[in-house]
Image 1 (tube, rainbow, N blue to C red):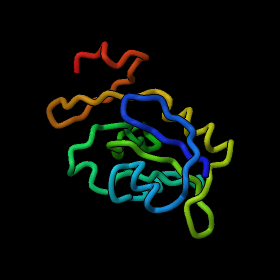
Image 2: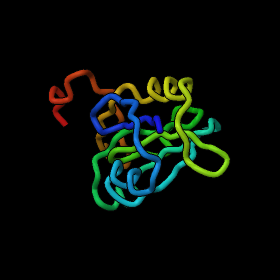
Image 3: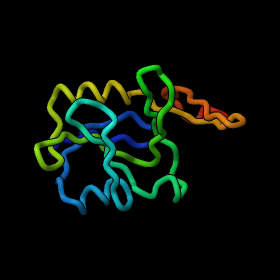
Length: 128
């Protein structure tokens, strides 16, 4: 199935992979968790224990006011949804979420806040 794979510090890529539990777990490096932050028929599949295991921050998810509502860590997938399972992304949704996650992000803890910075094409140029 055609899905969007998003790795930390990299631009997203459309990949074709099996929709099996084993393939999804291999892609995110462990047990999966599905998150449904949008009204579109899509899900984010990420590592269920990624935050506890210290995986690298990847992308922030924002609410309608632009406030961070969560930070996804480690590699994650954006998949389509069918009536009862994960499914291939439509071309329209693949394009939409590729654009949403196009720019990798860097994260910096500042007191009790986490600051998010867009990363340019050379992530090694950042001091953090």
